[in-house]
Length: 167
Figure 1 (tube, rainbow, N blue to C red):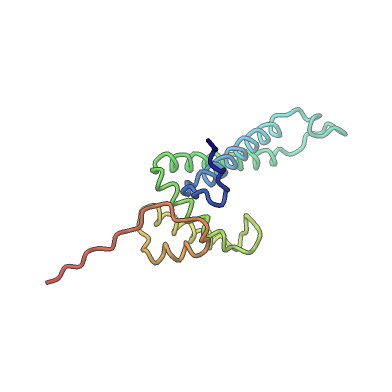
Figure 2 (figure 1 turned 90 degrees about the vertical axis):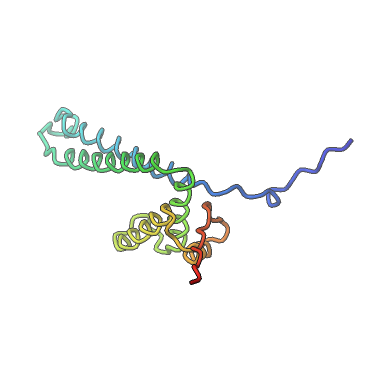
């Protein structure tokens, strides 16, 4: 008896988009900067003067430590807000939210992950993602987003149009 031929990766059906990579990367980056900012800020604020200024052992300003501590606090708040949002969403909502953001980010051509000029655009992207999570996107909007990256199918269930009442 012969064994069946192995299937090529191209013939393998694509698994549905889960958004796991988006959530993991966002949470890990936030956690990293939370820990690094907090640890660096505390170190600069409380380290002996000779550790910070090895030539003269003169006391330096500790403002940099306060700034790093505030950065750590900001990323800590971001981490816990995102973790709470992640835990409150269903699997489908998480996938749809991440899908909507990643579909729209595929169109960005500025090449910078943090572009201050694109903040307004990021707010609009997150608004669309929040509407997608709630199931408020129309079929036309879903199709428009799908066209941005056709290789990644919509992970949610399509909205059902309301039935028309005939009087």
